[in-house]
Length: 376
Image (tube, rainbow, N blue to C red; front, side):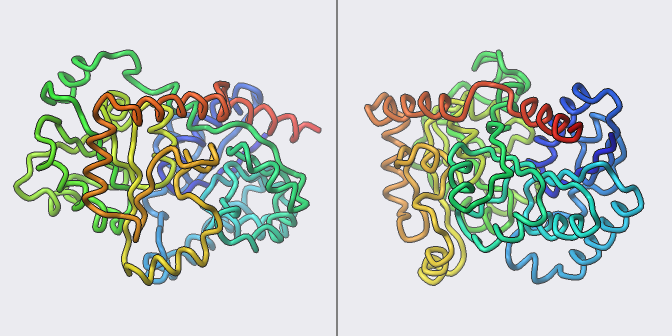
């Protein structure tokens, strides 16, 4: 069968590449054409457009790149129409992929959506169009199935979270702390990982506060996990005289060996938990009190981190906008870095989280279901 896959960001490239490997395993005649990245290209098929040429994140980026977005829509629709795949698989990236699903449905194409849009958090109105245009919706959060059923949407399938695959299949999985430090040219001090996000606005508002911590805890080596979408030049303006290393392509290794981590919200919070690293979630953005008010108007969930959402309680502290203070960040980081009850409780909660999210092979589960659905 012919599969057309659309991805718009690095995480989608990772998860789609794992999905493709198993689609090829269950369908010996699988042919791939896709908008994606290097990881997908390494599996095989035709890369039509790289996500680096299409990625637009954040309200300001969208407003200033409307022409680029519309051009990409036209190019994608034209290419899909020319090749008429057996199925269009859309991976996350709802701002682009949900309108694409609506268009493809009108063309009579089968549409599978892998990694469901987080409509339970905001923009719930999207469900109505999703019901009409998506033939099979693949959920990666255990609570999503009940959520969609409550909204009379039954074309859903829970496959587990592909982050489980990514973490389990990471490189250098078995190396020691000493080997990691030697390979990455770090010193012997215990590490604190800083994950300031993958958007320029996240760096601007979160990284400076994270970097202040280096003066508070000199017995630890602070290391920044470099985002795939950035280069060293993106971090240099913030580092100035600070001798802090930025590691690219080593996020899983860094977090797995770190004593603690400070993480912006997103998939990184779940990855950090699955890697067994105690964490603090902080997220600052423009607008101060005004942005905080706007966020509470649109965000319909009690937490911003996936760890707390899945466990239905505050396991990790969320220092979000008005809840943030530098003194609290310092206090919490010191407590979690020590052999404290708080640290042990968080690690115990992580074990519960792993049981909920699953230990299986989500990418294979999703691929097997997709092939079975197409063969019906």
